[in-house]
Image (cartoon, rainbow, N blue to C red; front, side, top):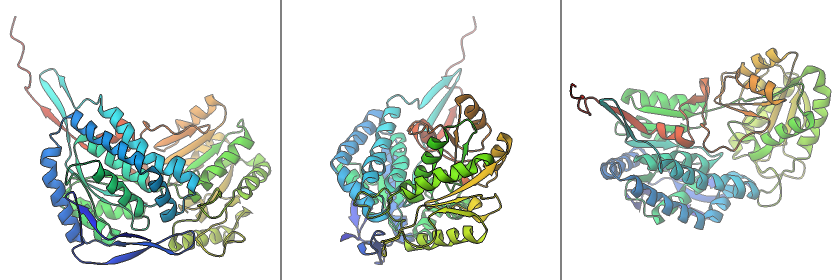
Length: 478
């Protein structure tokens, strides 16, 4: 049983202003895995004040000083790597193998990537008589989700540290253990007091307090579009910068000349990874209509070969994170059936032999049309909708026919796939399974958010730009 009843403010573990606890549920067996305290606006205010005080000195540190602190974080993270992976499996149900090779790995990778960028990053340049300076924006508020918990903490904290910002983090109250271990790592690494602060709580209380706080200079939010809108509303009166990575309903366009077996199988397996709980998952598969029957056969085999079970065992897919999510997904699967889509694999209810835990059957629908609910709403579960198209132009049109624009996928000959990729309205497009570039900017078009994370583009969100006119004296007349 994990007990995390204190917050981390000003370099110390402190009690909440008003004691209130929350049970953290293990989604694999529905048992209580631990308890956390739930914070309030008063806790946020204390954390922001600590961050504001620390900003005065942290913002003036040298590149070398910040690199030294970040290196110590890397070393401490490596010591706690196994603990981090175990916590993620316990709190949100990721299979142990996924937690080890991907979930926990991303926390370390973002810190190392930020260090590599910082070593050569240009914070100033001279353009004739003018000097342009990039300065840390100030105190940052971070609100992060449960689906890739430490990944989304690290891709905000690492560039913020690198650029000289201070911060207050609210991790998801549904999956908070990894956030606490992250905080213990930073404490052990000797991050100066107040530079990093943690307050637990829910969105309406702690999240809203962070977003609206007048001394928070920017807020970075990852989560649903619905919640992102509320963050933006709360932030608007103080005119702070808002960076958001929100929902997705990503198209996966399989062209006529693609390797069908490889593309369809890969697309199904991609969605089933992490139980479909990835905002960039390729949940709308677009295939040539004349190949629908062949696609169905391949997709059924891929879904039915996906093993579901205890995330601490050898299953490829664990549970979804909570009862709330399980019920939402079940409702949308039933909606797909009711609206006339062809159920290829899976369906409502738990997989056979699993009577406890928030497990969902790997589900595939075919003959889906764009007006169906399952083609429009983000399900955030292991559900793939297959749509047919007649022409490449129609595939592009249907691919873009969504309020979201986070990611897109194309499979086919390189020349044709490249051409299609240029026409898709999404922040990141993967060709023939390409991916894994930590330097590539990540973020969305339309209602998938604004701003970019990862790599050097991620630094920009944490910097203000100052122009100093007349910095260089005019050249003396000849």
